[in-house]
Length: 273
Image (tube, rainbow, N blue to C red; front, side, top):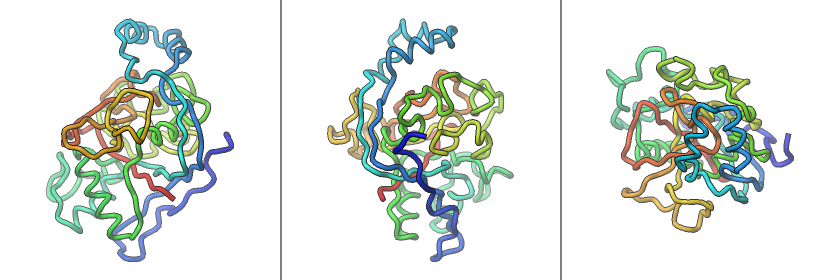
């Protein structure tokens, strides 16, 4: 395990003392680190050797360009949630505030038996409303991860293409190849699909909102990409259940307006220690 990685998990699913209806997330602590962010020429060559049905086409049509150039990024210490926020956790927020229901919920609640599934049908604005509520109720300061924090938690220092290594495996994540036709409970693919850090569902299941505007690399948190705007597309990461393995890579990135909602997009919490 690289030296800058997981040391501990905090707030291990405990009930917050201020209310029995809030369950605090399990957070993974990450020390200050440096890593190569993005897709390298070597990564593309590996994909061309193993994923011939699409990787050559992507390369010929410059579809890897949004992930390039690969570059070194320094990250200060942070914490990232082990799991995406679930329907059951988001329901505490709905119940407490009367906030509008996520798309697809009926009768003031999520569909039957989907409590441990990641919440979807919410946009970035909804995710931030949940975070503001959680911070107010707990006195803590959660936030969305920026996209560099998200990528490091998925691939860590060895630059792996997928959280588990450099070869796609449909038994380790919920993508189109899994034929699930919907989300699965968080951790359903653990531990085989987990990152080295122990973060689950970093690829597949649902895309996850980040706090970063979709801008060209290199990543620089001080170049305006961390501004909060309604007219900018924000990076989502991880791929999802009805997207193919092409996008279930640690470095893959897409951009969506903050008011966009989808049955394939959720979010994960982060925090600065």
